[in-house]
Amino acid sequence: MSLQSGIELQTRRLAEMSPGGFFFALHIRFALPLLHHQTYPSGWTDLYTEEAYALRDPIIAWGFSQVGTTRWSEIDIPDPFDILGQARQFDMNFGFAVSCGPMQSRTIASAARPDREFEDDEITQFAKLINQLHNITEPPKSLTDAQIEALRCIAEGDRHAAAAARLNISESALKARLSSARNSLLARTTAEAIQRARDYRLL
Image (cartoon, rainbow, N blue to C red; front, top):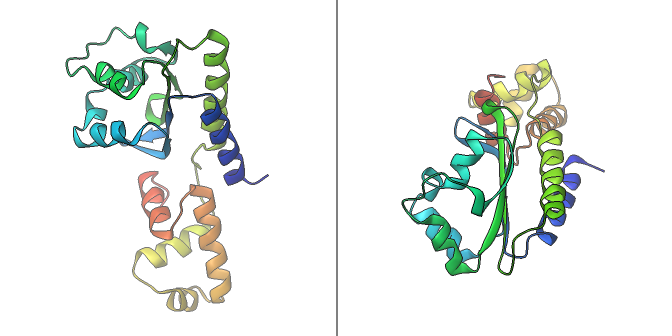
């Protein structure tokens, strides 16, 4: 199974366990996650984005201050904007949070449901999947010289043909190097791969 297929499978399992929606942000570095996904109601995500609640969310604050799991009802961090209260208007009445990984590469996730508190074993199973996602998406600590050379050429403005000529390789070989770099960095595009390589001090 490819890494992407593994991520998609875990994401489907998380969705099945979260009747009111869920989100995860994997390997948050420099305030941005390596990967993120959410299935909360669109009305809630629109409001959350418009009001920039990520900067004020007690769930996110808890995730950066603790490692483990907690029900929303157990979070004692101040919520002056009543973010959790507003979430209930979208049937996100009960939920929990998961946090794992070191501070410099933290993963935070959360799930909701409308009808009851999550049971301990449900939280445990969800957290297990999040930890697995965290582990399989660990950003690389290095790239190969070939990957770095290919990314650097594109970053400096070369088109594929020019980059291939500069490196004295075929264009198909260049594309293969760029593809492997994207896969290593879990990037959808070469531009995204270049940015992530720079963020991780690999380029």
